[in-house]
Length: 205
Ligand code: 5GP
Image (cartoon, rainbow, N blue to C red):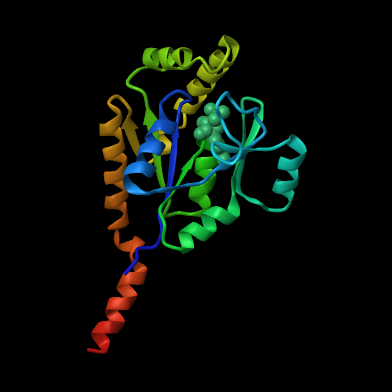
């Protein structure tokens, strides 16, 4: 008997290592990842349709009008959004889907999908966060500073998440996230399909 697919929302400050955590979850445990659309420019090495669907502002705004996103938000001057079709189809097929999105989007998802699991990934300290952002070398110092400012704002919303996982040692962080998902999938409210089936089977014994 298949479980209903779970929606897993991962957020965290830019530079907290969410992307790496997600890649490991896909590789080790076969999670599905929703690829977002964005109006920001691709970073070196990023491929359209792999990291993001890169869109013009006009294309993005048309998708909003067509109800093509389950959520969208603006982040440091750009639009980011979760395309609706992939998520809805994967959940129907019973797959666990990860959304790697920022705080406004995460809270929006929880309103629409009350069973979604909201996890916040944090670095061990603010100093380490700054070092990681600078060390990554993908943004100029002005953008790094903007992202650190945004982190300060996001920290105000951290407590609205259900779980906080510290990304110090990558493997441990990945295991912790996976364990949380396993535990959540055992909740009674996540198992209505199984419950209904076994009740019917018992009636018919
Ligand atoms: P980045 O530019 O570093 O790839 O992403 C910036 C922020 O946007 C990150 O916090 C990331 O999680 C968030 N983000 C990526 N995709 C989406 C999305 O579809 N919706 C929302 N709300 N945030 C997103």
